[in-house]
Length: 369
Image (cartoon, rainbow, N blue to C red; front, side, top):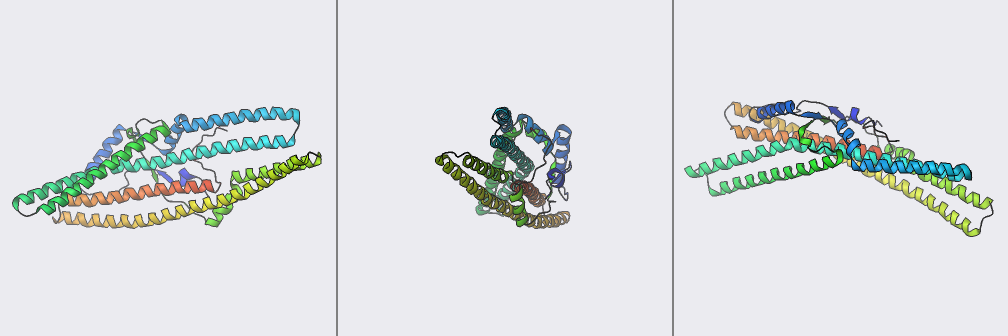
C-alpha cells in the first residue's frame, strides 16, 4: 500500500479543468480567471502544510507536549543509571515511544484536516460565481415573465414560479457565501493564512490509488499499528514485574495485584485489536461508498456535458436563448465541481484508511523527533 499521497493522489495544475468552452459564461469566467492569475499568488497543499507547521496552535501544542515527554525520558534514564532496573528501563523506553507516536498521530490528523479544508475551500471558491450566475439567470427569467404578463402571454402562476426560483437561487447563494466564510475562518485557524482568497488554489485531486482488500488492510493494521505494539509491550512488562515479585518472595497481595495488572493488560490488548478491526472496516466501507459516488458523478458529468453540447448546437441554430445556454453550462460546471470535490473526499478517506492500517503518511518533510 503506497503512502506517497502527493505523488499518487494529488496532481498540481495551474489550468482550468472544464472540458468544453461555450460563449457567454465560459468567456467571462476564463477572462476573470486570467485576471485573477495575474493578481494572485499560488497556494498548493504542500505550501498550506508548511504554513500549518509554523502557525497551527494544535501542532505547536503537540510539539511542546512531545518536548516535555523527551525531558521526562531523559530524567528517567538518569534515574535508571542508579537503580539499574531493567523493567524501569523498558517502561521508560515505552513511555517515550508512546509519546512520539501520539505526536505523529496528532500531526497526521492536522495534515489530513488541512487537505480536507483545502479541497472544500477550492470547491466553494469555484462554486460561488456559479451560484451568482444562477441568481442572475433566475432574475432574468422573472423579468421576462413579467414582460409576458404585460402583453398577456403569461399569468400570475408563472410569475409565482419564477419568484420561487429566484428566492431559491438567492438562498443557495447565501448558503454558499456562509459556508465559504466559515471555511476561510477554519483555514486561518489551521494555517495562519488570514485571507485565503488572495491565493489561487491549484492542487487538483485524482483518483489514482490502487486499493487492497479489507482483509489485507486489517492484517496490516494488526501488524503495524503502533498502539497494538505498545499494548503487547505493556503485557511483556507486566509479566516481567510479576515474575520479579515471585522471584523476590514479595507479599502475596503485591503478587495478586501484579497478576491482575497482567490480566488487565492482556484484556486491553484484545480489546484494542477488536477496536482496530472495527475501525479499519469502517474506513474501508467509507472508501467503497465514495468510490460508488464517484462512478455516479462521472456518469452525471458525461450526461451534463452532452446536454451542454446539444444546447450549444441549439443556440447556434437559433432555437434557444443565451440564458438557456448559460443555464446548461452552469449545470455542467456544478457537476464537474462536485466530481472534483468527491475526488478530494476520496483521497482524504484513503489517507484515513492508511492511518487505520498503520501506514505512514508522507505529506511533507516536517519531523519534530
